[in-house]
Image: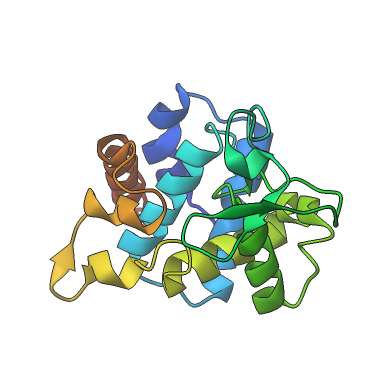
Length: 198
């Protein structure tokens, strides 16, 4: 399901009027991953694209978190301890689990759990989350399955509900919810553009 000329005409203003080849390649890879995952609801596709647009600083490519977790506990060698919110140090693997990918996967446990789910060793190789195919798998599994916060795309986009604002709860509370909702609606409109028949 590659993006049409009409689709790119519709989203170009989000990118300041011009998309780089890297941005186009990124969008095409994401659209292909969505098609492969049988996500056919344009609202869900639009919200995923808007999330990537925001989380990856408009690059549409998987990125490592700016600052690599500096100032955050997930940027230190800490993992879950025995009590809620209790963190304990770890020595191995010799890795930090700051945000990587399309949705900025963070924390030791999230890399461990997502790696197990995808049958790849993300704990020992967290930079795998920067590979587009792996980043897309993390994003799609996490957002459709409610694996990040317990809320999923289906909670906000279904037969009875279209909630662009609260869909942000899938990833990160209501942080930048209005901005991302606006981006999503632009992507949605562009996805619904039907090429003219001559």
